[in-house]
Amino acid sequence: MREPVTILGNYLSPYVRKVLVCLQLKGIAYRIDPFAPFIGDDAFSRLSPLRRIPVLIDGDFVLNDSTVICEYLEDLQPSPALYPATPRERARARWLEEFADSRLGEVIIWRMFYQLGVKRYLFGETPDDAVVRKAREEELPDALDYLETQLPEQGFLFGEVGMADIAIAAFFRNAAFVRYEIDATRWPRVAAFVERMHALPAFRALAGFEDRTLRTPVAQQREVLIEMGAPVAATTLGNIAPRRGIMKVE
Amino acid sequence: MREPVTILGNYLSPYVRKVLVCLQLKGIAYRIDPFAPFIGDDAFSRLSPLRRIPVLIDGDFVLNDSTVICEYLEDLQPSPALYPATPRERARARWLEEFADSRLGEVIIWRMFYQLGVKRYLFGETPDDAVVRKAREEELPDALDYLETQLPEQGFLFGEVGMADIAIAAFFRNAAFVRYEIDATRWPRVAAFVERMHALPAFRALAGFEDRTLRTPVAQQREVLIEMGAPVAATTLGNIAPRRGIMKVE
Image (cartoon, rainbow over all chains, first blue to last red; front, top):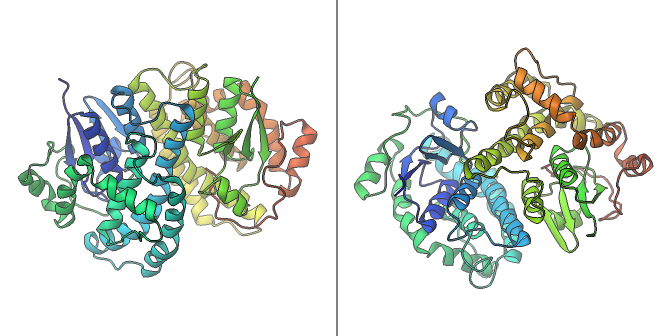
């Protein structure tokens, strides 16, 4: 039995969600150190030079970036495989994961979830309505148009569920947090795919912790998650006084 | 003998440079379609949904994102290996490649090369001096401080030269294009490493084409490169009238 790995992160981050679903599917034991995004001191910068979450801590090994972490977990424990076997399919899977992390991240996280959630509730600032409107009415529809050409009518992208499916689906949890619903008449494949993904046990196991985190002030999240029975790790960095950081939730 | 792959890109992009060095080291034949960054029409968007270069075209297979392309080339032709063999070293290599693509990209490309090169010479606009100053005096020094803790005193990061070395070194060609010199008294490891990397035949083979592209107006680059004997492909997208695009050179 190996020691559980620690994920420094937060249930509301889609990048953290990718890694937790990956760990779940591979049956690798983990604990989460519920670290609030946008908060962090110099000790955090030393663990995460780009001030991003998640950070994986595996004994004395510290690793950043959700995609790099998932590739590491795949190398560490190849079964069940979460990337396809042939070079072209692997490449297409990696590209779709990158599209999700990069473009869905820009639009759903930075222009919607950050504006309507983080900025309003964590910092008490007013969202920029023009940014949110453009994201909802132009940028996200463009991304959905593209995904509609890529996603399968049934099942998953490459046979068994894999990282590309997981990455795409992870972002649409955050879209739901800010009450964005995918129009199933306009994007039937994406709507059905996201519903299918979110119904998987690995996503459902996290949903309760996510919903509760969403409704709990940052300072109480750790305690509330422990009460709920979430696999909470001892704190890695100690108690950090919230401050506005330059953090990116990637 | 396989047909050469086509790289839609430009010798001035560090992301294109990564891929060309990778192709060179693996001995995979390629041609470049010298596509000017920041220019492109809807046909380009169909090949590159995020409007980024490079794009790899391998027969009927089209692939985006420099990291995804290099991983594909590694899968396609594993020897010489450009990623280390053990899971932890592979992960660290991928992380350093991501750090380069992401952070050195933000600072060296968007806040220095774009401002001082592209904006001034391609669009005839005035660079934002405050952005450039902050990049030179704060952001790039911070990144160099981090790299100084990561790079080896001699040789390469993981024994033989690999993608992490290549990615880091690729960005410092663009720093040189805008006359940024690494202070060897402050960052001796980085300065020596970058010099060592740029002296490799795979980097030197590109330097002449890069320097010439830098001094040639976009509309004449293809012709000038053909005259110089660069491996120029037939145009993929036809002649495109330059327009200001939303393209990211990644």
